[in-house]
Image (tube, rainbow, N blue to C red; front, top):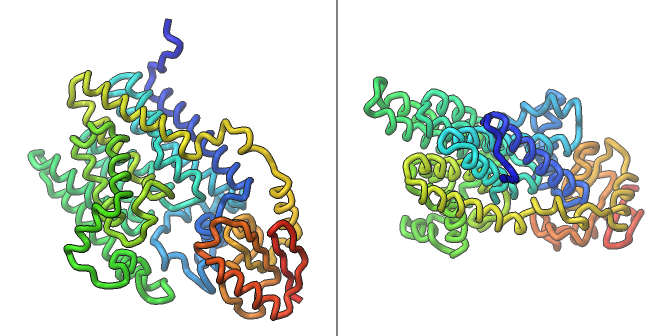
Length: 460
């Protein structure tokens, strides 16, 4: 007797899994925010931007600097669609719940395609592997980012491309141009694969080539014209992360792809998530644009398996696995599914999804309660300079800057710092925070609270 039999209707299975993972993601993300683990970089930044959109204003983000227009940092106007929801339910939790729902939506197209390819059991495995994939789980627990929109769009587009539904693939991929500037290259990759698949069809490769051209042109336009026009320095801030502050030779760029070894861990985990069989699918080439800039970058944050950068790769490698399953024998298919499921199972204890069943993750420590009371003493609408994690708790109801930024005008009314914040090295180095605290006290700010490594200053 079977203990569990997958539903015989693909829509029920797909949407049921998506709903389950949406609930898990929401629990993890909101609870981490409740525990004060969210950060100004990036949850606070995006809340300030969407809060501005919600009130019909330009996305000026004080956390990035005085008068900083966020479209000068990255090109992500699609986040403005959350403005009406934020206007109704203001607060960082709204962004976290929206991200959880968007990320979970990626389960739907891949599960339904897997159902067509291999039946309900295969669909169940693919749906669970997608929802529990390490890249997505890491992203939903790591504040809010614009790529929350990219993950479901990529899943729908890749599933459509795998089914040879070229128009649907193109339409699902085009909104990626409004998610982030580098995703135009991924749109171009979709166009090239569409052209290759349709090279002997009635319409030929031209529509795919046009889509590829649009993707490349959009990236060039946003990086060279749109972003510099909003950027306070008149340029694209991330060129230096590619060139390392100099002019690397082609040989040095090529050497970066495989060094340091952390990059091989990234590539191995991606291949294993695809059950290794997915490497035989042309769909895996959709990962090349994102992997290219990450491996060539001089920023070590891009190389590994932390942060949110791998979320956009999860639906692509899993789509490649489903595509390969349709063209292989049952024995290899079972082995590939087993490997992919094993990767998901092994990484669950490593990434924050396991916090749902950890009692200590749901407790409220005395220090957490005291921190909440301290922040509650700051009135709504106040101007506040705060350390990284405390700032994320205040952006929904105050004008917040980072404590390490030099004050402008009369300066903030309040300064609040958690000296135990492990994230203080970035964006604020410990030395910069200490220097600014001395400067504030020299300006006459008085200590209201100095207890348990928490410091609250008030302007005279």
